[in-house]
Image (tube, rainbow over all chains, first blue to last red; front, top):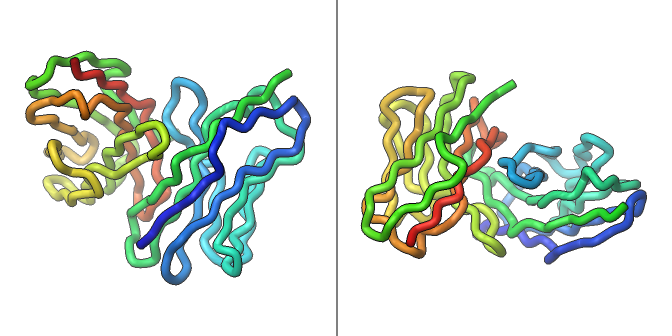
Length: 113
Length: 111
């Protein structure tokens, strides 16, 4: 079946540190891949997406590359800020379902000044 | 900007009560969703609607029903609330495909 596995948090970093949040998936064919972010007290917002192998999604300094060979979609940022503190969700949309999103368990990021 | 509005941020209900969670979107989106968010489990799809009066069960529909009488409004109904339905409930909408816009969530506590 389809599933998404994220690294467990919390991830605690100092401001300006490099961020990696690992995400791997299980799915048939070529799903679309997403990162959503949930800031404290808010709903989820789409951060970035990639729809085919080797695509790189990017937004607000965050990047993730769709790696079919390793079934991964790791989220990276070169220099985090306190305002990046949030919960990050990796998700996939299967090829055989045009609407469905399957989420990972989420990774909480805490950035200290 | 797309706006998805959930009627309550916090709700406390008693076991056995019938509970209504309301969601409204203002962008004429075809698809609307109800998810449940629990720590360590991420988001799980309860129900999905792709048109007025049309619905499909998601991964965890037991104990829930939905209503979509108008395109902009999607209601989640807990027929008889139980303590294991204490959770954060998130509504979302999308025009097509899986790229969804989420509401702020309703934190429901059943006592």
